[in-house]
Image 1 (cartoon, rainbow, N blue to C red):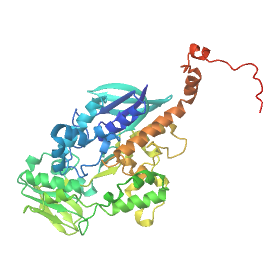
Image 2 (image 1 turned 135 degrees about the vertical axis):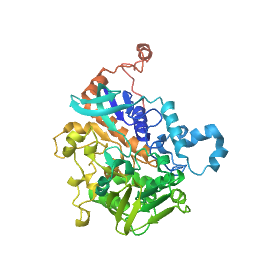
Image 3 (image 1 turned 180 degrees about the vertical axis):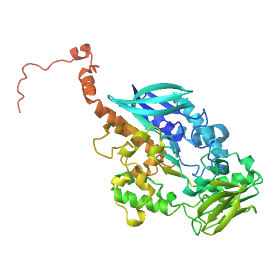
Image 4 (image 1 turned 180 degrees about the horizontal axis):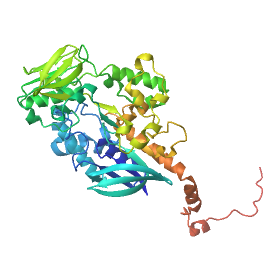
Amino acid sequence: MLDALVIGAGMCGLVAAAALRRRGLTALRIVDRRIEGHEGPWVTYARMRTLRSPKHLAGPALGIASLTFRAWFEAQWGAAAWEVLDRIPRTQWMDYLRWYRRVLSLPVENRVEAVAVDPVPNGLAVQLSRSGKSETVFTRRLILASGREGIASPRTPDWATALPVDRLSHTAEAIDFPSLAGMAIAVVGYGASAFDNAAEALEAGAASVVMLTRRPTMPRVNKFKGVVYPGFTLGFPTLPPADRWQLLTYLFDSKVAPPRASVLRVCDDPRFAIANGAGVTAAELRGDRVRLATTAGGYTIDHVILGTGFKIDLAGSSLLAPIADRIATWRRLIEPPPEQTGHEFLDFPDLGPGFELQSQTPGDLPWLSRIHAFTFAAAMSHGNVSGDIPAVSDGANRLADAIAAAEFRDEREHHEETLRAFDDPELSIEDVARLRPIAASIPDVAD
């Protein structure tokens, strides 16, 4: 039986596996549905030119200086090149992760998908699918590290369902940008991915791009930069649920300013325009064009790109769908004020201290504690330690520590037997024989 099966070989999956191995949990398998070298978003649907995180952050290095991006970069191009580097190119970050996987000899299996999980004594049976062939793997722990889209689904507004699939894309999909050349494009949303995809469309020759946003003004501050420090990382999961709710809803509801570099890619292009306060209310196909109704008027375009992000969706995971309604969420922890009763954070799973799933009804599915959600879905319970670069090593160490401790508790009797049988001598018989025993009688020493 494996110590752990890791689903996902992007940054989070790799660092989780590396942290487990450092704690002696070496019976590992890591599977990913994508082809080798294309795990995670970096060369699939991420479209920014450079990372948004500053280059000095250690990321998945687990406190090992020689495992950082800087060490990898300087070994090839030198310290002088590092000094002049501004931001890390996105595709170069993927090159680093490929090296990270290789230098740590992490056992990744590509084009493998986990499709079902069931409990067995002392573990889980996970059904894997590879090229149409099925395999059942037995593991003590299952780690879901399938990225931003793990335990989530692309957020699709109701109005978008009225459009044919060839007129609608989501930023999380593969998009054939050259096919959009000469077209009028509407990008819905104002976040980083919305700007990046608007830029890709323009650079591929789109006739025009209009960005439609519900907000009346563009946010200028990224509040998340204000919580990248050890106190928040370590202290957040120790707070009462109400305090965590207050902090994270404030952070997300404040909205995040798009990265300056992404905005600069489009702002001087005469083909680009932004319409603030123009939330889309309806869509229809008129002839061979798309008509969008918004709160600020109508737009006739050729193609829509949704920059609407992801929505946490336990039922969207094939592994969790059969039991999604029995998994504890934040709805059992929080009674939000009336204006937040529909907040999507209520659908985030209520995770334990080791990122483990919990039953909605205590005692219902005890084996859920063997499934660990090391994805963005952990944000409400643990903070932003399992999705982005800044604190991912902290999250991986927290996960690995908890699993190592849980495995010890589960196998306590075995460990005690091993301890009682432990007989590796510190001293040989000859060593003991060389000690001169004290005399049977020692004369009194006069004062």
